[in-house]
Amino acid sequence: MLDEKKLQYDVESGADVLIYDKETEELVMVILRGFTGHPELLSYLEQVVKANVEHRKNLRVCFIFNSISFLSYSLHNFQLADPGKLVQVGVSAGARSKPSLDWVRNITSNRLSDNSVDDLGQKTAHEFSLLWMLNCRRLPNELSDDLVT
Image 1 (cartoon, one colour):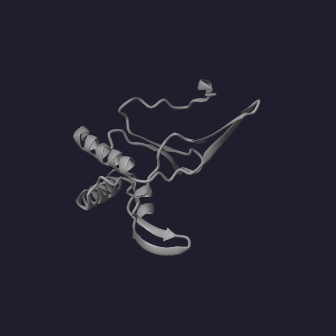
Image 2 (spheres, rainbow, N blue to C red):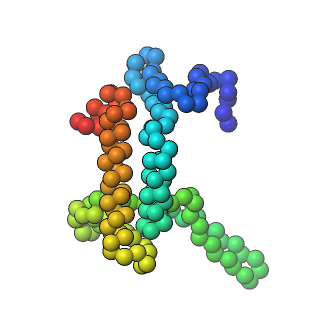
Image 3 (spheres, rainbow, N blue to C red):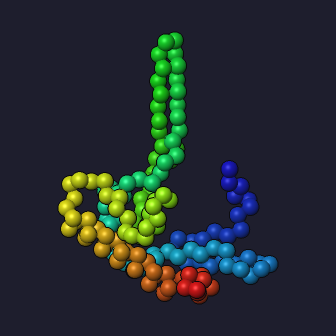
């Protein structure tokens, strides 16, 4: 439970904030609102992410097993521990039994043409490129330098 009395700083909506540890002077938190600066771009990026989530295999494998027995009836139910979906895009190192550096091939939808799959891959790669450029421009040097080196 959150103890509001222990809160030390309240960030106003729309404010960008860098928070440093008082003792070590180390950067401990970054809040950057409106990271892309363009709502239309953000909407487009969201569409590409949703397309990846829709057409790619879910990596979540943690299950909760429920077993209910009543008299002579038994019900077994498997459900994901987390209802979210996590997909892998880009490059993979391959299976542990057969290492191979290559693009992931985890499209689950048979209704997508090869051109559509390639188009989705290109759009996703462009998103990574844009995110990298935005990170280099918007993040404080102490973070972006750490990403580069």
